Image (cartoon, rainbow, N blue to C red):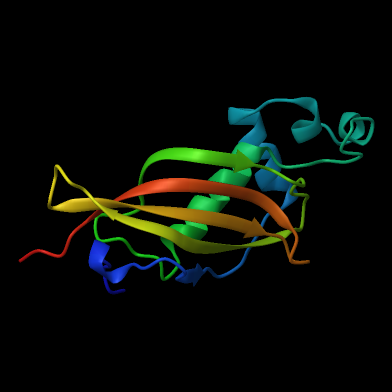
Length: 149
């Protein structure tokens, strides 16, 4: 992969990932360690919840999204180095068997006025399920180095 510097990014660019399936075992394993709530761990209790079935933690969805981003063509030179989120939402749950993919759109590119060796890109990343429905949306600010002289 070619590393991308601040000068390589422009508003409107869209980057897409491959797909990754989330299975029941992964949902249970993640939830048992990081988000042990009934609708992530117990299928019977999950059926009685607002979700009407087992669902992945939103933080599990975020972790899968990160993996898909890292493995995509979106390759800032120093890695995907977030310095803040403006928005994060989970418009629908991820269920066992869902196949996720990510699209990231560059919204803005801002060279730093103080640190001339870097800048910030503002990116909206949407994670979709196999039906093209968004399951996670976030807008983040990423620190990106400028191309060395």
